[in-house]
Image (cartoon, rainbow, N blue to C red):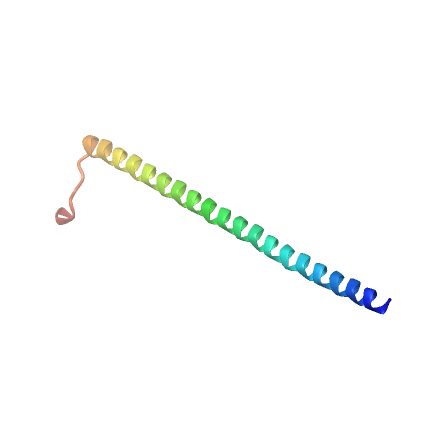
Length: 79
């Protein structure tokens, strides 16, 4: 009887340890995936921000061209 109880205890301990290790690895995989998605989102935000800045620069250049057609602009050497 003692031998069967010891085997059952050992089996239970090994099973519990195995499940714990699997759960930790599974959780780490989930966290790694979530972190990677965060990096992708950051890259997309950075790309959108850069695109917005480029659009604003083009708009500013367009306005400057219109302004310079309407009004004479002094160069730095004339100032």
